[in-house]
Image (cartoon, rainbow, N blue to C red; front, top):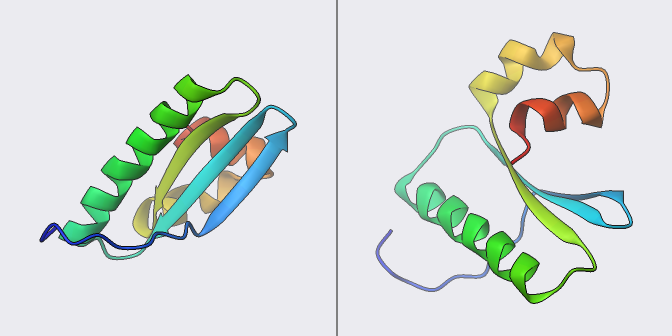
Length: 86
């Protein structure tokens, strides 16, 4: 939030097919830095998808309180992607 440059390591990367990957970020409590991080991750996915066609990268941002709302209804990753996938 203060403009400093920092390294970023996503919580998970899930390759669903040979042509599709989700970059997943899980959050309990959200800070100003988290908002900027997700905006930048979204931009990175758009940029990398414009530069190449081998793999489509998608962002998935899951807030803890919403996760607990849906958790009992989730059977597999496809269920998760339907709710949070972009």
